[in-house]
Length: 242
Ligand code: 6PG
Image (tube, rainbow, N blue to C red):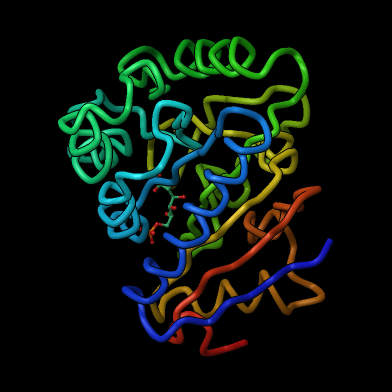
């Protein structure tokens, strides 16, 4: 598996570059297969990307389906909700312009129990993709300072899941459960793009990209090995130890 690393000047440049990657992937998917499936990441880094993406009015939004790679176990209007962040930055502007059908947005029902939300979301994936492991056209991921990605945190049981596609992953250090894609789904993607910015990511990024000894259990981002393209879009601050 070849890992591409693009180092951008700063987080704004990273988000602008990521926009180009997302627009290209969506256009290619719709042209090739009549529809595109994009899984959004949570956190703060992608927010500027989503705000830029909301301006791309010429994209074939009627054929673009949006999913969430993970979700906090909170209602959709909670300040911590990844859906809420995406709704404010991307979905509401597209809905307001009548560009994106509401039915194209596949939300994790995180207001339910975490187990119910996970199993219902797996059904959403099976309804959309069929019974084969979903091959998302593009999955956007972030990386935490501890090397987690999606909600696959170090030393959590979710790292061991190789059958289910979506699980409720207890995260002891956060005293919560998170709903998350598992490695099989991340690895089945046609493309995976990590967006990593900030000096606090320099150490984990070096462990993930260059260390020969770092363990996946310590740095879960290292366990993402897609059959398709894997690219890390990073800013100079995060790349400081590469
Ligand atoms: C979440 C994300 C998580 C995020 C990283 C990086 O639910 O928080 O899915 O995996 O991508 O924590 O977040 P930042 O981009 O805010 O640093």
